[in-house]
Image (cartoon, rainbow over all chains, first blue to last red; front, side, top):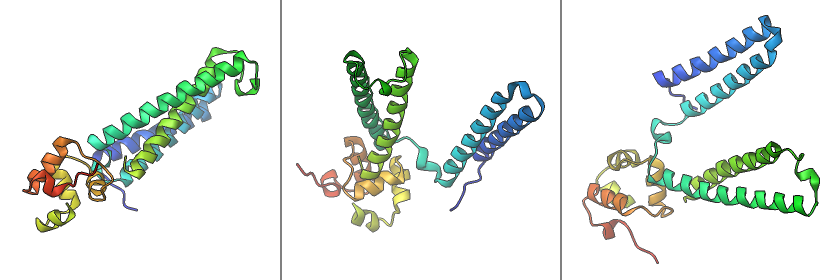
Amino acid sequence: MKFRRDRRILTFMSVGLGVILIGILILKFIQSIAIIGLIFISSGLVGLMVGLRIASKPIDHFMEDERSVRIKDKAGYHAYGIMISVAAIMMFLKILKLSPSLIPSDDFFDGVLVIWVIGLYAFLTLKWYYNKTGE
Amino acid sequence: MKELRAKYDLTQEELANKVGVRRETIVFLERGKYNPSLKLAYDVAKVLESKIEEVFIFED
């Protein structure tokens, strides 16, 4: 696998490494905010992985063109439909008092979190699928 | 489209650069798995110095 080594990629990777380093320093020297150190380390690792993925693709791979925009529109439209359906199902389950385990608690934000995660994964999966199948 | 591209000795990458799309889009166009916009069809036909109907086949 070939990796691009242009300035943008190197800057991005350096920032990722820097964030990890800051996280390690926080963990080592400021124990009281160790959780922030862990957040820094995990964010840096995600940044590095994203950087490697971008570096492994040709420069035009992430360019927007009419096909990529059309795929994004289509995936977004269907992900929106899925989110609305999930919200409706959750609401009906709540009203009918069925399967309360599906809804973590009465807290509004728990429900929003479930819908948000489903919407995000639906969008990413559909985008990948439409890109593979040719829209 | 593939034959016309070969006639002008263009790679998919070069054609993509000329019409301002990703190489992937040209791949899907050649496989018949993507319906281009009128603008893209026009741009491709122009680069290949042909008429749109010579490059693309309309299927109902």
